[in-house]
Length: 185
Ligand SMILES: [Zn+2]
Image 1 (cartoon, protein in one colour):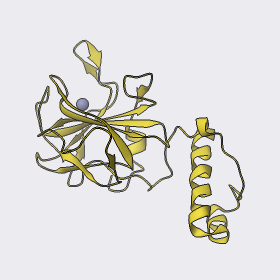
Image 2 (cartoon, helix red, strand yellow):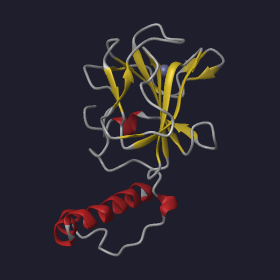
Image 3 (cartoon, protein in one colour):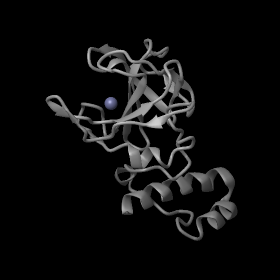
């Protein structure tokens, strides 16, 4: 997967800057030597394993997945079942793009990871997210709580991962392979 490799190299390049050439170079096994240039358009894709945070900070189980049949459409996210009130957190550093309510999604929030060119949508929050549009959230920062607002029959997080911008030229992908690499899965 060249895209994944590119993302890894980009991150290792950052690590090189942060940790010093010798340490980062040793950890990388020689891949991504200092000075390697990376085309920023190739950074879309999974982040290196363990660098992202699972969006539900508490006990949870995996529910219906991407592509499940729904009335008039297919499910374009991953359901994560958890008790109402369980904290939901930012999967990465991101910018808040939308804080709103919609009759199917209920209370929802969309945050954007500019570096990875990914948008994350959290739906069915118990209450309006305590965030402002344009605000930066840090990895693991609370963005809401699990609820069942909108078209939901049980307490859960409906999580979408978009490559590119949410409903602004991007497209949703199956979040599960990404979520499986997140801390706290
Ligand atoms: Zn769902």
